[in-house]
Length: 172
Image (tube, rainbow, N blue to C red):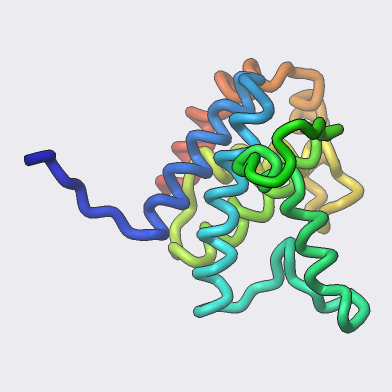
C-alpha cells in the first residue's frame, strides 16, 4: 500500500549526520540538531562496536571500573531528555548546545571510516572544527594564514564558501 525504500543502518546514520550538519551550519534549532546527531551517533557507535572498534565518545577505556554506565548516562543525558518524558515530564534540563558539535565530530570521523568514503559535508564539518579548536587536533592546517582567516567567517558563510571546495577535494 505504501511505497517502501530500502535503507541500511549506515545509510540512516549518514542521512541523520548530514542533515544535522547542514542544520548546525545554518544555526537552526539546537535541540533538533542534538536529537539528530544523537540518533546518527548511536547508529555509528553500535555499528563500530561490531566491526572496526574505533574509540568513540561513550567508550570507557579511562573510566573507573563500575562507573561505565554513569559515564555513558552523562553523555546521553540531553539525548534521553529530548526523547523521553515518561519519568520526568515536569523537569527542565540545562542544555549546553556546544556539546553537540563534539558528538557530531565523533560521528563524522567514525562514519567515514566505517563507510570507507569521504563525505563533503562531514569533511567540511571536521575542517571547521580543526580551524576553530586547533589545540585539540594533531593537524596543523590552521598554521596556514588563508585557512586561519576562515575562522572569522560565520558558520553559514563558511558553509556556503567552503562546501563547493570540499566537494571537489573529496571527489578527487
